[in-house]
Image (cartoon, rainbow, N blue to C red):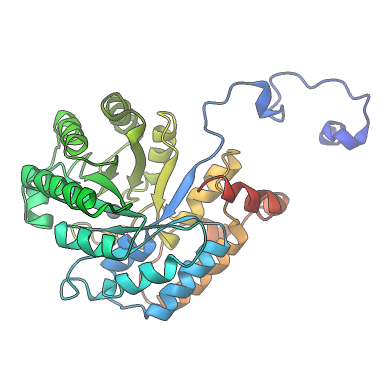
Length: 351
Ligand SMILES: [Zn+2]
């Protein structure tokens, strides 16, 4: 096979490869992709909140530990919502305390209001994420607040954070940014105005979320580009649900606008109450596989992540799981590249 002549060890006198050959070093051409990306695990929050089974705290701690050992350095461990609304996430305070013991782990929680933010700051979470809906109808149904009222809550959170001298970062995630099951179309201008309002109200950073899987790569490219014009580097994350199978394609589009941080849930757990059978976020393991095959380092050891997936799948027996890599496995010739000290070293650079 001609492939042998391309092996550097086959002989130093080999002729240079033609530029069109796909095995040419990537450094020879300008890459449109970033060198690194952060995959933030949200399965423990976005995933578990839509599964009725309540996972014991000890299993969640095992999950956090194993994800950490696999190289994940950002994990959303839960949500400070009343336990009567989401008993699945009632142990969030305990999980924050536990996760904070892992050196270098960036621990985030979702907070729907000031009371939740106070709890996040009490526990010294590294980040609190306030979800805001660009869709008026979804905002009222989900947060019981209009988008304007939710912005006022962001301002109260920021004032409280400043008064306490807390170091907990405040991110505002604009949900239903690409459409809404209740309202239908969401105008990009409304999303951009809300982004600006969130920054004006004191958010440290903002992100865009396709909550119900209405986005496509073209709309992602357009909206993220426009949002970068508004927020610059403070637009820091993409959150794509795989409701209609486009989550990874949407990541590719957002990568082209310079976004280097993505939410994902292990085994694609989660869903949407308005789309029965729909998956949650992009499956963590599939996203990591895609990024690393594209030479975008995530610092994550994929074989370890697949082992964790198997374990979590056992705990969630009977619940719908998603993703495709676990079925096909990692191609043999790539296996070593996905599990090496190079990945471990890369992780420390991502914190
Ligand atoms: Zn979500």
